[in-house]
Image 1 (cartoon, rainbow, N blue to C red):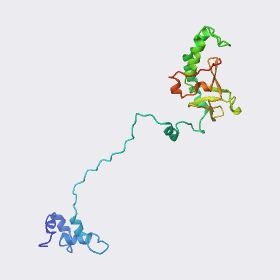
Image 2 (cartoon, rainbow, N blue to C red; image 1 turned 120 degrees about the horizontal axis):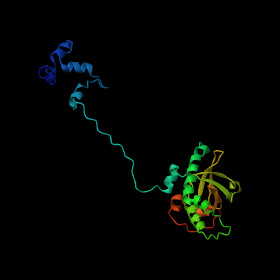
Image 3 (spheres, rainbow, N blue to C red; image 1 turned 45 degrees about the horizontal axis):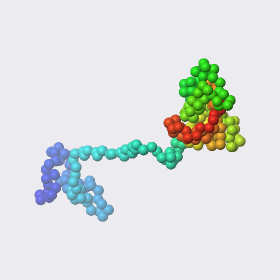
Image 4 (cartoon, rainbow, N blue to C red; image 1 turned 180 degrees about the vertical axis):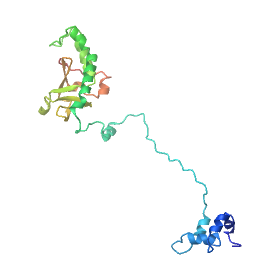
Length: 234
């Protein structure tokens, strides 16, 4: 193989490997032409192999950067919340008994908020003409208007839709215009606030209020002063 471009590769082979080669392979060129497959035209691809850059060591794999989720300080818009289904609960698969503990926690929360133990200790009775000299009535009106009603057992006392009257259940979600309650029949119902009157009972006191009095989102109602506060019945 004098003068061949493959001669240097042949002499660099270890002695024990060169001895193991058959006699029909006098050089590396003949060995590769026999082992390397030919292209579709029948010509050997040996020359193409030696024209390439051959990497002898194992290259380091490039680290694949994953796209991190975009973090924004802005809140989701109402359209984004609707598209994600955050404004509604699943209509099936909910059990009334799974939320009784939530209702118990709400009762404890309202007892502490309204101070029902003090009302009972002072034997306060709601006046029929809303003329309360003790000052408890306006204080209770403000607290009930701003209270969080998630977990409350809400009853529809009157409504523009006759089929809504008498409906009762645990409030699982409150929006600006509706209450979503689950009844003992494990059905989720959406009750509109507008045109309806609701009632809740806390420690023996029953509070009845029009839905128009809570026509706002819970987060806004707890911090902002209501523009109009119609009289509540106790």
